[in-house]
Image (cartoon, rainbow, N blue to C red):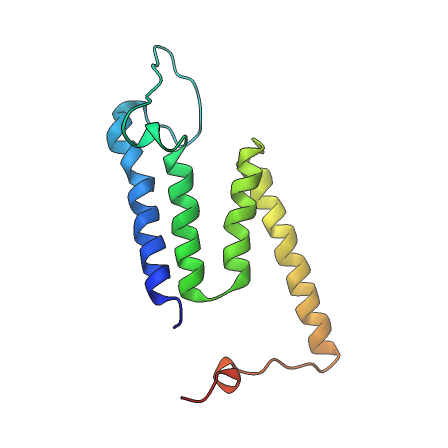
Length: 129
């Protein structure tokens, strides 16, 4: 696995960034960006450097997972999901858009199978060691 070190680092760093705000904000932590009654803006610590460390942690964690698995879709999906979240798209709509891509991929795979195109196993395409 060529990206094992990078994948492990991204996965671990993303997990730490994802959990850090839970401890910093305590009971005021929310998975969604929202102004709560009696809030105060935190600008010290990790929030002095990163605006939304939990979201960045999720993207880094997902990137680490995708690098470990080695699939382009696994890298593109978290980036697209993060972008849609930044546009304040509702999570159910993001899920439905991902389902649309899955249906298109399944249809393309089915059409290729009907034409007799077969995928080679990954072991056959890897360079000899």
